[in-house]
Image 1 (cartoon, one colour):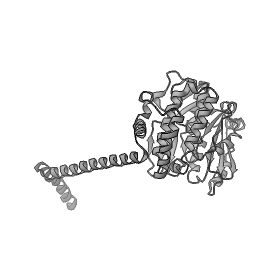
Image 2 (tube, helix red, strand yellow):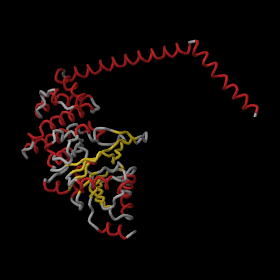
Image 3 (cartoon, rainbow, N blue to C red):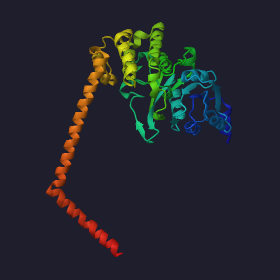
Image 4 (cartoon, rainbow, N blue to C red):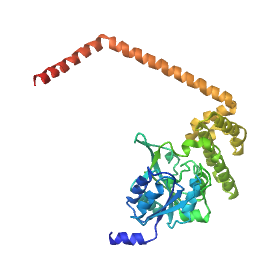
Length: 389
């Protein structure tokens, strides 16, 4: 170890990387490797284990034995990542905090470049980008919703509550945001003790309160899709998102900044509500959420008469669903969707039959048969030459 490295290791970390983990023995090694191989080294890693019953904690301890920047905090299982993140914040020493997930992995310049951007712009928050990684296919997929580039302000950095798109420029995910620790502490921000959507209140409240937000439109996070996440099982806790939005709404009102962010907030609530409805996997839960949105929740958030001209472009497809919900009860709506699927199926069956007929017509044509004969000649010559060898 060189002298510069020794100085850096003895210094206070600039970034505290906080990672809640639970039964991620398959992925935690790649996660930690991608952090230990960062091009910037003045950081700490705080892993908070939510009572894993696999080898997650043992693997982390193996890495701890060779790198003193890693710490492990072990807690009884509660199934709530937000509680683990709050626990990790108690031990954070860095000027900035970064909340990552133990099944993801990261590009080597993530800490170096995001911290440099935050420092250069004296920012409370630095936003950056991510992409999807499919665990089964091993394919990366670029996405456009972690950073909505159409909603970037003309001047960066910017104050959160002054942006008309403050709640729409990014999602509530914590793993694409470097956040100054003093912003968290001075405003007593905490992740909610929910199974899902625990980050919605924390992230959007931080964005609304930040005096200076900067943006680095580079992909640094590889978000793993494995089908094992809480998001993939949202029918088990169908109301967490609503509780999170309700808490955010009440706090914005209490701090008297709601009026400044109202249009952005309504669009965010609109999008989150429709998204969560459409992602449900059981008819019973779908019906329950549908009816409550229609009769209570839209009205509670001022969306009972949401105008199309007030709907931001990223929500346009969801607006058609909203209009159907206004017109139909849940049984009528589901019947309408079934009829649409039948029409689509009929359309594609007809297309397939026509394509099959077109292919047959081509194969029966004189031109196709002549071409096939001509192409077979070189193959026969090649076969004769090969046999002669």
